[in-house]
Length: 250
Ligand code: PEP
Image (cartoon, rainbow, N blue to C red):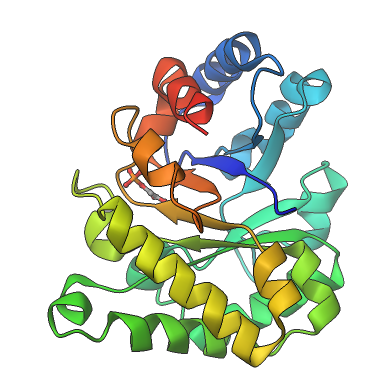
């Protein structure tokens, strides 16, 4: 049975003290009450502290990005080995902000995917269409291309290390959410696309998260949809009460 997951992407928010405070609050509030696997992705500088603070809690820490090279002259970058050396086994790749502001292409993401898999990391692979794609009815083909270009070169065995996050760009940080029906329609399409390219078992087993303005007041109806296996949460993951309410909506 595929896993339910709620992951919080903190983006460039929370200094060290604020990170520790939020994590302590989450540890108290989330105490093994949830059916879902819970992941938080603080900023790079606070990842090590996060792994330390969360050690006995069962909440997992993820990085928001990483470089595709093993090491070398890449000023300002972070490698898979560095993440693993501090106990971080999960990485978010392909977030729309990385694609839009840092020029990350499908081709670059394919390389990052390979590096993460070589290091046996779990990947939360993000993708999703822009507003004009949806308006022009191209959203299915855009999503299919993102998956094919960035991810579909992997082996069947690698899928156990992949979580998908469908995040329509027009819904991220805008307060506008895809309707539960729109989310379900796209998630079902994603599963069918994987079944066609790989096999039905892989398609049935992979967790597909929805991301885009998920809040305590809309999480339940989105998570109730058959092919939605949880959420990738931005803004609402920065507040312990809101994030806990979303986790409990699973
Ligand atoms: C995100 O950044 O992945 C996200 C879904 O953000 P928000 O929940 O704020 O829309």
